[in-house]
Length: 426
Image 1 (cartoon, one colour):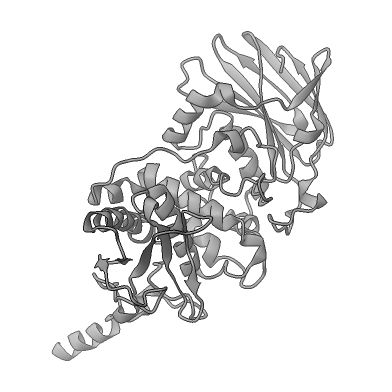
Image 2 (cartoon, one colour):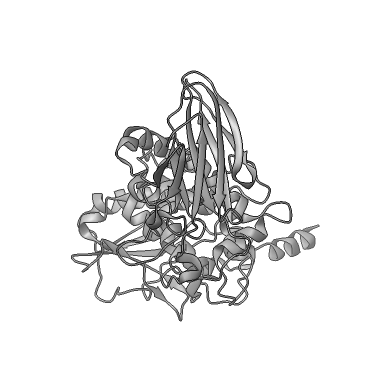
């Protein structure tokens, strides 16, 4: 029995990560850095004070606990150099490294960034000193470190803009989501406010779903799409918390495909990602995506958002404005004015790639119903006090292989359509 116990012990020697990771001062600009503070998974270099370092450690350890321990993302303390990536339980304890965080006096053009050592396969964080106590900034960068650790998006051009979408998703999820509530509690961290930027994600909902265009794109703001799929309020098979790390582990190696291609495969044969995108935008009519903090901001800011998507042609007919035609996987969200009774919609024009929904919020504001409009046609009956919106989404039959930083006419040309409304006006 003693021999069997010894053999089993040897076989499972790497079954669990160590409680304290190994410092690795060769990662990042640590030369000459004699001041640092350690925690089990992080080393903070050159902190202004011990209290600043302790505060940064508290929320970073909470974020680590949420994403790595609870949600099972790959640790940024592991090298992404091996190919293929080994199973975590096969990695020796001394190859789990602390993530280095460097406080810098200045960082031109940025509050923080996440460089990486491609030889070692390890990232580190640079944080300008004024942002060390700001989880929204630092956990965003931690999101980049998680993406590096997952490996398979590195050097894939068509995923590039999505790195920022993921990083802001990580920052908001850490701060607001019930998925991170237990981790925040372990480290005495408060729930925060949502990072949602409604004036971009809703006012410019017609844009390509992840648009990396300089100065006008949405790639930092598009993260609610990821939050919707992560929360999965519509219970689509293949979605939910498992989309991470699956968007990386199921990425076709060196294919330069888009994340939408991966998500389409995760759904299996029963549903296409176009259907999910259309339902996401329908739920964004009232920000009904499982994020109460984001929805509260919507309720307080909605009167200031831009919904001017249609031109009135008279007689209940409307045409989408040329500059706001929905582009690839983008949408128009159109508030309707209506009294109780029947409301009908007929969309004409290029209806092939369009998916449309009537979205109705009950008078008490506690629930929302979604009425599909197959072929752009349908109706619903509004009760007293109910509020309706029409959502029209560009959902082309075929997924595009596109680089969000270099959009072409294939994705950046909107779809033209007209709407006939009965029982309501836009």
